[in-house]
Length: 412
Image (cartoon, rainbow, N blue to C red; front, top):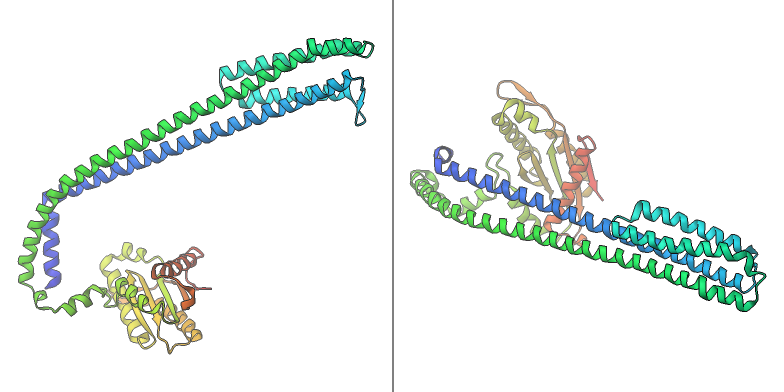
């Protein structure tokens, strides 16, 4: 009678146009909110990528200019040595060293103009800086042959009046390039911050609008649900469920209606009592590709199959383990204290194979499936909470399935 009552309530709810309209509205709002969140994530990602790219370019710009300045400083040092009358330094001809350093600067200039300079102002300022570098090189080429024959005072005069001003100008222009690059980076960071703020404000506004809409629909839904609840109470008054005790209601909350086994809530309660006090063996079993049964034969036959499997497990292994039906096709066994570790592993494999035995169903249909499982010998020193323990079992179970199923994995 309880099932008939529930079915009658479900039929009324499906036929209620207000409920259908409210359901569609909630779905639409959920989709809108998901789209907004997805858009916000895309914007945030683009903002991050743009900011990161600009940061990388600024770092590359600063590093390249720094490398050019280092080469230029080395050139100036070599020029000073040459002015002082040195022809070689550390066994290397100074003029050859200067020439090689200018070649390295040319290479760095090409890299900067090709891959780094991304604004017209930055390119123009860098090109102006290269003009100063080129002028410095031309001046060196003009005077290098005469410096060796000049008096020291003349050499110093040429350096201070002709070479040093070009060197200072080139350095100042290179510093200006660094300043422009840094300013571009700061502007990009400001744009990034603005885009981030816009994205966040948009999400907040949409969230507020959806919250208001949900509040309005919620009030309407409450009114509708109150009417449905009134009908439910009237139907419940005619059913035998009103005569059940609080104990039976509690048992029902802790029991899977289909299989008669304890459910996930009961599993959490049992593990909460065991996890800090004793060691135990626990195993989880999952029927591989169970959905294919429902798709091929329908949910009724699938439910019948699960109920049959559950009865078989209770009949054969209830003396060895406390049993739970966590979800539709997932079972859990907590082995009793008198079951040794080795025996628990053997029983787990027997249970896994037993679930996968051929099973005769209504209409002479035989169902058979492989089963994946995971088993864990828990010690209080492992210091896990219930959710973490179940996650470890679930992770090992999914690994077994991913590796082809039809196997049991022991958690070490």
